[in-house]
Length: 378
Image 1 (cartoon, helix red, strand yellow):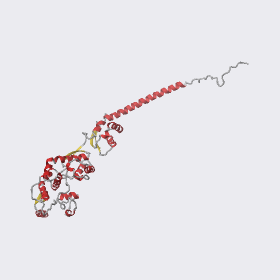
Image 2: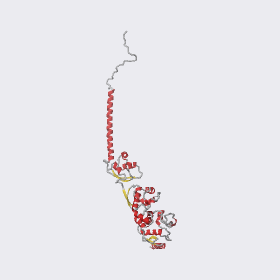
Image 3: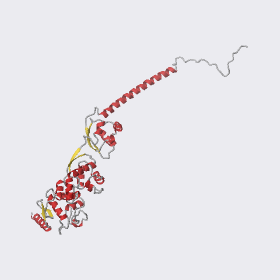
Image 4: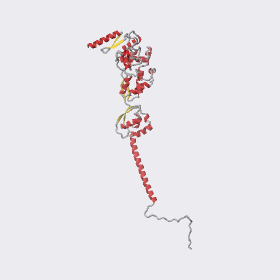
């Protein structure tokens, strides 16, 4: 019996495997694929880096205002306009190329907090920092306008003119005049609530305003001018005569509306005579048409003298009207402070364009009848 070597149970004898002729080992194939992927990755990284560098260079040119076509534009930042709308305007006017880059810059520079409503002239030579600086309140490129406010204009007329010149809108000016408590002694006793509270104190003059000016600043500029012109010496003189600043301004405002600049001190004497030397005919009534026109906002009729129930009807109510009816200039204010000394209680504008003064109602009425007869015959 032949001897047979026993192997432990459960184990098989491993047979050597044959290699397929001509087949590349798998390890080598994996190495070649890995090398190719690395090359592709490197190429991708280089490409992306080049692209990013190119984009970064273009973006940097925009940030630094390099290689830009020269142009300028007028940019208006309206009250209440959003920062996004401002950036849109910059892009549309060719001042920036990339809104996203400008927004990113604004995050770090707090640009949105530095921009002030107004109208500005900008150009493509300005980098991002210069653009933001020149959209601020201290910008040397902020556009200005010169506005002349004539003597005798009312608050409504002044605000209309400021809107016409692009300083602000009537709505914004009315709102600020009604609600803002300006810190001036002559306004302390006047309640908030109406733009007419500033009547008489917006001093007529030639002003320089910014386009798109803050309405509070525009109004304050005129109030400061009044406060400076109606100085302490004049206030003391008014008080010595028994009149307040407001009394003088009310009288001056009537003088301003009743004459074109001539005979103002004489007209002032008639007003004071009616206020202080009450005659049987006038009984303390000023009888001034301009106060009634102011209250009604239209030309008046004969019936209005008796039927118009308003404290501005100086044909029905004695004494001064409740407030000024215009914004007087210095000539009218000085006339109110220093009236002529006369005994006249009446005046009327003649056919010759001049004022004629009378001591009695009969003298005035006779003159009016004569003037009418001359017109008919002429």
